[in-house]
Length: 296
Image (cartoon, rainbow, N blue to C red):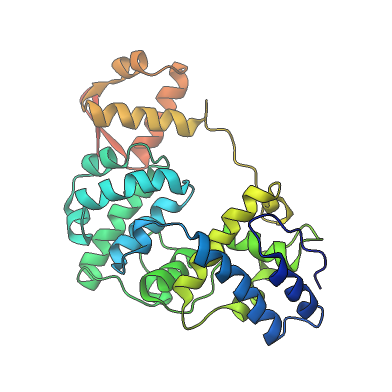
């Protein structure tokens, strides 16, 4: 199934050679055991120390999961503690003004996540008494939580053996089981994720997989391209996303700005600024009072 797996200086070549020999007979218990040993050996030596890994508080783990969507860990690491200090639990976040939430969120990008996180906190308070439910099925009834986030929360917040896949986990499985192919689908990978899952320690296992995937990306040129789901991220500079973020940042810093003032403050074509203001109003980020705009 897999031969001559590329080995870098941060990988255990001896264990990988043994795994290559075992996996020729299929994904047997022996191959699974060696695969886990390779990943866990690396994790024991090179694990990344993040604050959200040191807590078992479901709220704090939820905040980290939402922050880590489409944002690099370095930026999340800087913002996470500030956000938790400002909003230490579901009740605090649910009751906070949106303007304050967006002000603390500044620098993270994708501001929709901040709005969704606040709405989610309100739903948890109203429906579950401020306590995050542990089952993926209940989690998926909450606003903004899809299959992946529900499975990740079950694993990381409650140590439940749920099956999940994201970019770094995908990278690891492609590297070990499909390294000589391209166009690999998640449908092909998910049965292997389930078969190799450490059901006693899913939290640690998924953290180990993610760290191994991060390491692989530093050793091998863009392994994610082999996935059928790979999409190159569009440039941020000059994008509508950058413009919307600039408008929100201006209104968080100085509520009550007029359209003319925003046109002078923001370096972008007037028609694009006006269109972005309409979008932000329609999506509930901002409201208009008289001639001025405010964060909702």
